[in-house]
Image 1: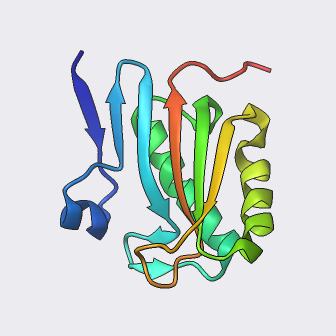
Image 2: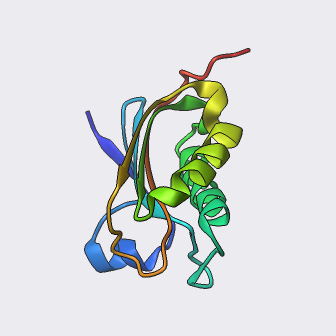
Image 3: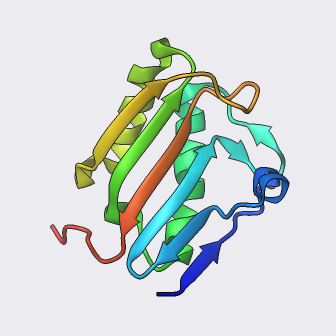
Length: 131
């Protein structure tokens, strides 16, 4: 089965040679995404804003792949500070909680200085609950 790639223009994609998302059939695998505006290189301010910015980037990749946030079946959250987990989780619940995806949260250092969160998702195109 052939694969399709979606790129966001991130400097990290260019640096490390990866795609924002890889699509194989109806499965969409979205790379770890931090809360950076890739047009300006600026990190959003704080964990909540970075979560929203990361979700905006993820949503754009999913839409380009013919999908949406509603098709997300798994979320992986990486946060360097356990104190930010509640704020991050609150934004995830507000934006994708309606899909009740599987979720794993890990507290560990991130490669991007100043990043409060990195999100990785998997989606199955067409799996969104129609309600």
